[in-house]
Amino acid sequence: MIDLELLACPRCDRALERAGDTLRCTGCGVDFPSVAGVPWLFAEPGAALEEWRGRMRFSLQRVDRDVEQLRAALARDDVRPATRARLTHLATATDDHGRRLRALLAPLELERHGAAYATQLALRTRLPPDQGLTTYYA
Figure (tube, rainbow, N blue to C red):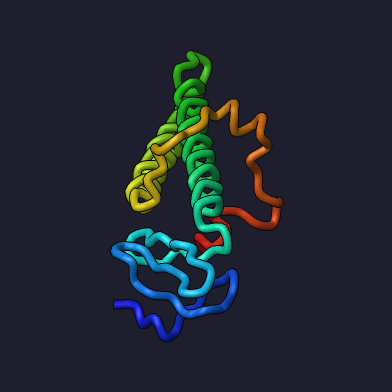
């Protein structure tokens, strides 16, 4: 259970109250959704949630694309046995990584209004090189 006394509206710094599954600011009236029980406290919660969904979808699409490229490399006849073994392990691990990320990120409901990989690239959905969605993996 979240202690509302510890939280405040990120827009106006006023107290929050429960409103069903969301929290509502007593000052400006903005509703803040919960994602897997965690309040989504951003000044523009809807826009921030869609941005995160878009970035996470793009990240998962990138993983899927990497798996496809590895499998295409494995389909070639001129791949040496040691390279084939390495590519097989890498493709299996990358595919497993994508499945685990999807399970972990399921509460974000990433399937909602998804854009294609090419669209994400056209929109330049990229983080700065020193900041990424997987920056804190280690």
